[in-house]
Length: 130
Image 1 (cartoon, rainbow, N blue to C red):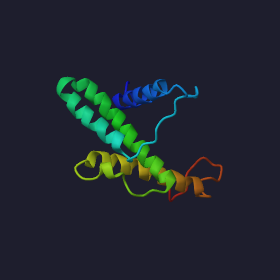
Image 2 (cartoon, rainbow, N blue to C red; image 1 turned 90 degrees about the vertical axis):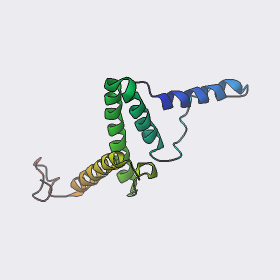
Image 3 (tube, rainbow, N blue to C red; image 1 turned 60 degrees about the vertical axis):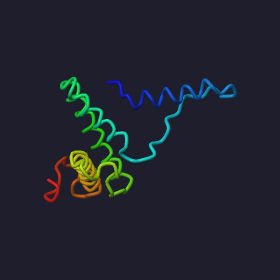
């Protein structure tokens, strides 16, 4: 699925690349996200607007947004950042719940990976995690 924000970023980067006569021909690098969760919040706004015109497309967008919010939670758990993104706070309980699900999933996965009873080679989790 084409992501409007990604396309806009690529277009800006490509324009910068073409306008600089001294630019070395390196692969285009992605710019880092400045505000955690901003891209996901904007995608949610786009999905809400799309729902008026094309509800089926909006449903697909919401599925992608849910995956992104959960992935953000898993990534934050891996990085040790226990605070949800600022863009998920306030009215966006939907995004906050998805972020918490991803965060808790990753924390539990890490805990099971570090548990000697879960890693005893039997393939079965210990009584605590199972």
